Length: 291
Image (tube, rainbow, N blue to C red; front, side):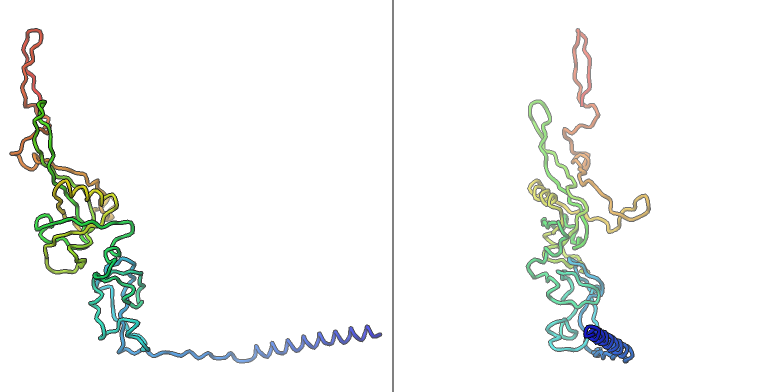
């Protein structure tokens, strides 16, 4: 009998607990949802900060079109955190290089840019895996100052070559030019990387972006003779499909001095017989022509 009473009491406790839980749950569902108040910070249109006008990947040489002023909420230490209009100028960042990528609309800060006067500036300009080498130019080899950062050039080597001309060991010095590098990018002229200049200034040193192997070629070529820059067109070469693409070239063409001047003679074979030799065989003389 006592056991039945205990089971009945236990069943009543479970039933009561279930009813209490259901009532509370239903009551919570019928209550109106709490409204969350979101504080809206008013934007002061009189305060504008410098932001990226477009996506700026790391290594981008910043131009005026890449930046813009944008209204920004006022706050403490705003001038210390961002570049504020009327406090600093947009022109300060023209010619800098993006150290870390900046998305469109993101604020531009000094920490994300590399100034030309900062250490590591040239390294930031180079593409991954590339090297920078410098060569000396003048009014002639530098195309009268009309080569600017961002242009693409060929590098031509002009040097002297000693050749033997006959069996007695007498020789003659020949001159030739050859294209040792093709389609390389100019990253700086002297210490300037600004490609927005409107006038030609004859630089004395051109810095080129090359591969590690091309850097070795330039190092040897500077010891062999004189280097000249040949400016390439900005337009690409259309392939058979009509799409524009830069033409791949071996960059190993060469020209002998005899091809440049008809007055220069040398021992380079021309394929035209010019030497007459009398050959005697079995008592018979015969003339033969040799190059």
